[in-house]
Image (tube, rainbow, N blue to C red; front, side, top):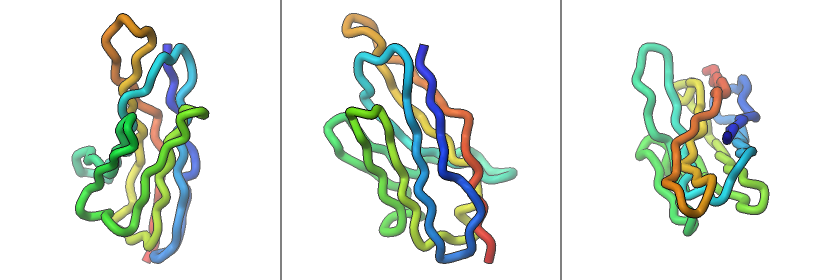
Length: 121
């Protein structure tokens, strides 16, 4: 089994920064994709940023230029550096990973438990 554990959330004022981390552990052969999603109260969960095994990245338009996703393959960890935070960035941030536990089996999707980010004006 694979576990994803997020950390780094908290409360900041507008304009501040936070660095979120998500560490994957367990039976891991390869991690093909790691994404960050977020869900604000009363809203649908949305993709914030993603990073593929080859290092290519993608971002939601709302965070481009402010957030940076990166990955440490050796530590099976993905990071989300969030800068110039706005009140509308307030949400629970979730880690998502597509993980192969063995070379001969299809990968599965795993979710973390979420970490709260609150930005005050």
